[in-house]
Length: 144
Ligand SMILES: CC(C)(COP(=O)(O)OP(=O)(O)OC[C@H]1O[C@@H](n2cnc3c(N)ncnc32)[C@H](O)[C@@H]1OP(=O)(O)O)[C@@H](O)C(=O)NCCC(=O)NCCS
Image 1 (cartoon, protein in one colour):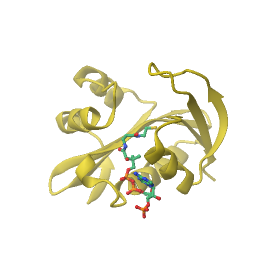
Image 2 (cartoon, rainbow, N blue to C red):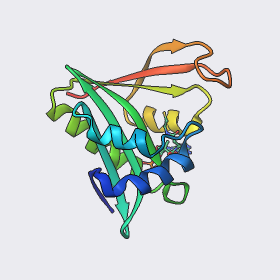
Image 3 (tube, rainbow, N blue to C red):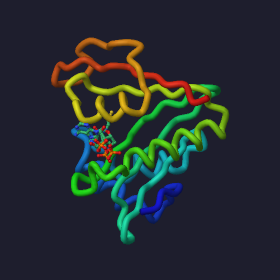
C-alpha cells in the first residue's frame, strides 16, 4: 500500500470512498475543489492500483482541521487509516500546523476508538449537531 498526495485522476476513486464511508458524501465538484484549494492537504491510500482511502486536512495558521478520513469497508482494520493519519499530520506540521482538530459523531464508535488510539482528546461537545440528532465531539491533538 502507498500513501501519496491526491491528484485529479484520483477523483473517481475518492468518490467511491466517500459513498462507502459517509452519510453526506462529497461529489466530484466538491472533491475537485478540495484538491485545487491551496490550504488543503489531500492524501489517498492506494492498494493494487485502487484508491482504498482518502483524507484531507485544512491548514490555517498553526491549526489543521481534519475534514475527512475514510477507508473502504473491505480495507478496514488493516492499518490504512493509521498510515493516512500519520501522513496527514506530518504534511500539516510541515505547513506550520501545531495542533489538529476534528469533529466526530458521538455514536461513531469505530472512529472514536481510532482517534483515541491516535492520541486525540475531547475538548468540546456540539449538541444535536448532526441531522440524526447525535452530538458532535470536537477532538484535538498536538502535532509537536
Ligand atoms: C474510522 C476509520 C477511518 C478507521 O479506519 P481503519 O483503516 O479501519 O483504521 P485502522 O485499521 O488504521 O485502525 C487503527 C486502530 O483504530 C481502532 N479501530 C479502528 N476501527 C475500529 C472499530 N471498528 N472498532 C474498534 N476500534 C477500531 C483500533 O484500535 C485499530 O487498531 P487494531 O485494528 O489494531 O485494533 C474507518 O472505520 C472508516 O472509514 N469509517 C467510516 C468513515 C468515518 O467514520 N470517518 C471518520 C469521520 S469523523
